[in-house]
Image (cartoon, rainbow, N blue to C red; front, top):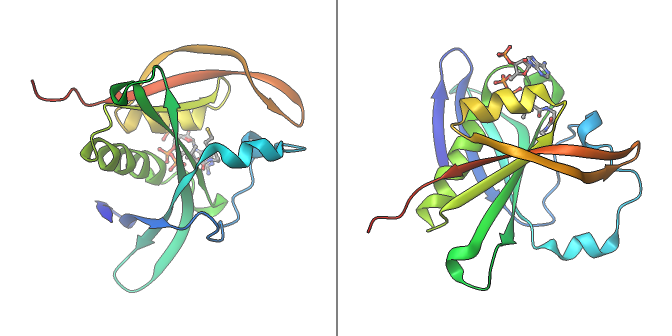
Length: 165
Ligand SMILES: CC(C)(COP(=O)(O)OP(=O)(O)OC[C@H]1O[C@@H](n2cnc3c(N)ncnc32)[C@H](O)[C@@H]1OP(=O)(O)O)[C@@H](O)C(=O)NCCC(=O)NCCS
């Protein structure tokens, strides 16, 4: 479990949950998939929920996921790609950047060097949140994501922790 306080908002905590844990409702145009491919279920998702507590009340405000991306057959070629969605009423309070930074640090602590996030080239909110989380914009993945309304270009961002020599 990792936490960080945001002044005026509360303490943001990410809590690991089982694969089939209920997802807090957080619809957005960026997650309007249309028909999903059953093969995508084998991706091996790990999940966390995001909680915010003001000391009296704790709200579940969103969720995070992570899956492996291999760039070669060696342990050091295994990156982790993360995703996030916040419940509508909790967006715009800087929770997204903090939660993604907490998850990147948690994954680095496990030995993962490269944490990635991809987002639609038009999703300015997530781009801003990733920047706040310390991710670096690397480039564009052309026509990488199909949603109900067609194919979309994605930006790819990374958060790296170089291992000690
Ligand atoms: C993208 C997301 C994770 C960002 O987290 P967040 O906590 O809302 O991020 P921030 O509070 O740092 O806001 C980032 C930017 O979002 C925009 N924003 C502000 N209020 C917003 C709201 N209510 N809804 C959406 N975006 C908002 C602003 O441009 C803001 O930048 P600014 O503070 O410089 O003006 C969150 O808005 C979300 O879950 N959105 C819907 C799902 C989604 O896009 N997931 C990512 C898919 S790759």
